[in-house]
Structures are given as C-alpha cells and as structure tokens.
Length: 219
Figure 1 (cartoon, rainbow, N blue to C red):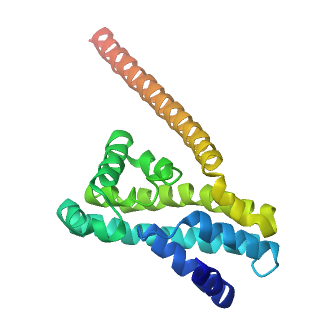
Figure 2: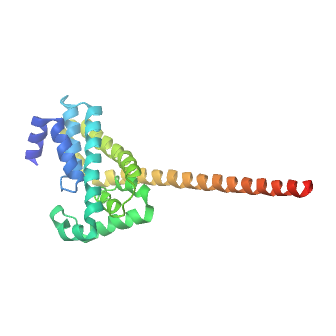
Figure 3: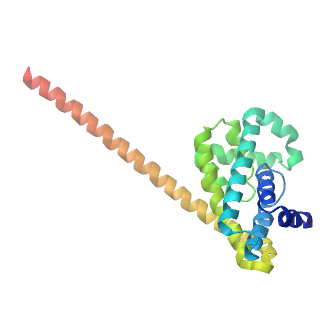
C-alpha cells in the first residue's frame, strides 16, 4: 500500500476523495487504511479533522450512489456475471441482499457500519429501486460515524496508526453497538408511530359515533 500513502501525501484531499469513492464503489481498497492514514495526516497537520471527515463522507455518498446506479440499471444478472472483478462473491451479494430485504431502508444505514456488508449494501437497494431520497439520507447517516471513527483513531494513534489494522474486532464491536442502538431507535419510532395512528383512528371513530348519535337525537 506504499503507493496509496504516497498518492495521499502528494494529492491530499483529492486522493482521499478518489480512493474513498472507489472503496464505496466496491473496489477492494480497505477504508481502514485510507481513513486511518487520513487520521495520521491530521496528526501531522497536513489534513484537518473536520475537512477530512467531510471529504470522506462526501466520497462515501458518491461511491454509494454509483453502486446504487449499478444495481438499479444492471440488476442481479450483471452483478453475478461481473461481480468477481470487484471481489463481489455470490455469498456477499446474498448477505447484503438478505440484510436489505429483512430491514428495508434502515438496512442502508446499519449496513454502512458493518464490515463485509457496508460497501455492498447499495447494490440491493438499487436492485429493489429503493427511493433515492431516503437512500441518500440513510447513506450519509451511516457513513458519518464510520468515517469519523476511523479518522479519529488514526489521529489518536499517530505514528502507530497502522495498529488500527489490528483492531478489526474492536471496530466490529463498536459498529455493532451503533447498529444495535440505531435499530432500537428505529423500533421505538415505529412503535410510537403505530400508537399515534391507533389513537388517531380511535378518535376518528369516536367522532363519527358522536356525530351519528347527535343526528339521531335531532331526528
């Protein structure tokens, strides 16, 4: 990966943007390396933390939209035929597809935080022709914590930023915690919305009953 380090040092934010677009386009460039090294460049004063996070998030969105378009216009046959060129196995596609169909839109958010799923979750969303506006919203919300976490970790580790690559388990646990919290919030909001809908339905029924009673008394 020496070429990547040199590329980012010489081309700065442009290199960060391009490599993260490719990573989110399912090209096998580990985000742990790209964002971890970006954090190291923050440590050295070459990057600033907020701008690096902004560029990384924007690149994640652009790459995800391109993946979404591939799923939308190409569909499963194209992915199964040419997926091997981007290391997309039938197993990975099946995993991402199941995750999306099981949880719907929230899977776009939670999937962005799960190693092994995050870069492929946009494909089944495109294949299912999931509405673009919520897709963008969930993608941004899922990309921000992952980007901020890895850049912050690279910054804190400084000269030892490559130690980040040994913390796959810790990163996975942190991601799962965020996913679990997001799912709990999602369930709470759905439950609350259902309760409000039931109350509104009951109030409407009571109102109709009262109107009928008033009409009968008038007659």
